[in-house]
Image 1 (spheres, rainbow, N blue to C red):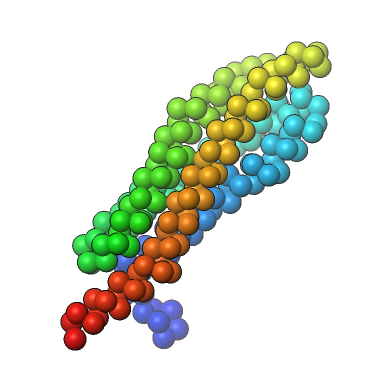
Image 2: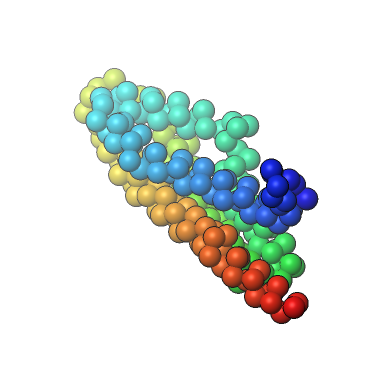
Length: 182
């Protein structure tokens, strides 16, 4: 048990909070790319945009980001499994669904679409001619943004499912379980 003030948290509750935070971080990450980063890159010289994107794609592979990026879907699935074992089955189903949405909606999608696009862009030499750079960026940015928006929507759906599980379903399930015991 973990204690915060007078409130004691079970391992399940601690994992649930960690799952919500991790899911929220991923949602925010994809949101920032959707509504600021890519719009900013689209607004600058395409040679600058290509160079900046190459640098960002290289820098995102780091110890601070990796565990959250790769771990969040699995953290939700583990939390769901523990919830199921504790008898909060509707909560567990929602958390499991959230984990699956994230697993396929951003992790698998990233591995099969965005990463190959990033690798291909990273292998390119930035053209010095404006027209060639513009064509390269126009062949990359709209497609990448479409799939990133898909990842944002998936993480949003996953977050809504996890919040509903934690805030609405879990308290009701716990109340019903207490009433069964009495």
